[in-house]
Length: 216
Image (cartoon, rainbow, N blue to C red; front, side, top):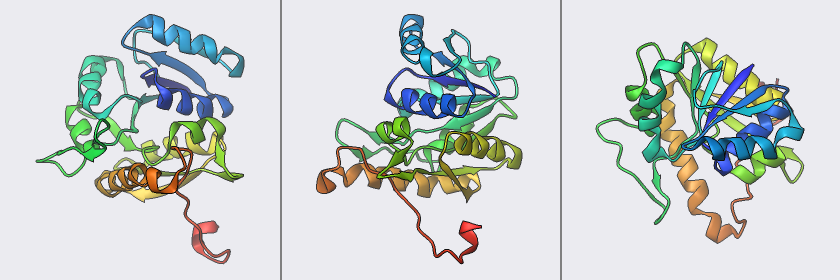
């Protein structure tokens, strides 16, 4: 599938690495085309990757800070053309590592969805994952878990396919309303890095007995 990534930072690189590993085509769209072109050039040996000024693709990933995401959605709204819009952000002030107020809505994902054009299919995913582990695809030999939440079953399925193709484990987390809990998980994962001393190289993993339905 064609995966367009809005952003040129570390999360953009991490998600691109998984998409390319899964055999998908990646396009970077940045604030400046030269940044997008430079990142595409760095990953050129991993698959089909390019840069563009327009966000056209089967999947469009918002790999920008939460505070910039609604503006990015409005800026490129006319280019989505039925694409699945993947929100990987967390509403967190990274300078002080504190949650941002998203009232009157319950989650950052719902704030982004409110800025999206009518009919846009917004899916929350990758927000509990850090960039470094995404590039590697695993931590301590264990594939990453990616929680996927959205209101459109087909859109969720598309994102889960992207996750699995990249060698990760997709976990259905329910409707987009569950983004509130996923964003809390994402924030907690950031907040414990100092205590763990893992330097944003850790991963959240769900373990279940082999007889559990979750493993079937």
